[in-house]
Length: 189
Ligand SMILES: [Zn+2]
Image (tube, rainbow, N blue to C red; front, side):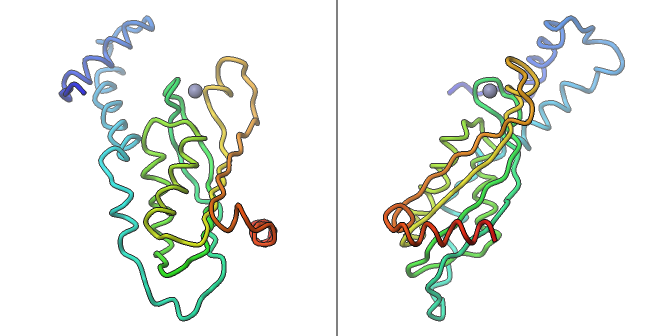
């Protein structure tokens, strides 16, 4: 991977402004390259974060808790890797703990680690499930994501109100139909 300086990144934004037919030197645009590059550090902060670190603090003491843990409607914004257009949606994460549970804010942070990268929704869904499965070693994990893709809503075929829904089921949620039913009842309830 080549190393790009901040200055070079701002110059690239200026090039794009000229490409779309703008006068890159007009007053309203003078600070735009800096602002765009700054917003990139927020939109793509996930490249600097390691999901395993976030999940490494767990509680072994679960007081015999032996049920599904579900966190619903975790809002996120991401960008698609094909157009760098926004993907706006929410994720639902469930896991059936075995020995370890994790603070609920950590589940929300895991979504952001993967959302704040260039993504495709299918990949993001399985990445979240995969890392929870690997680190917490639960009996099962389920991740469901619903999102609107701006590359589809604002350009191309311009279909508004379309939502892409993806899910990954692992372990007991994949193998045990009754648990999967219970999961969907909890999500609806
Ligand atoms: Zn796209």
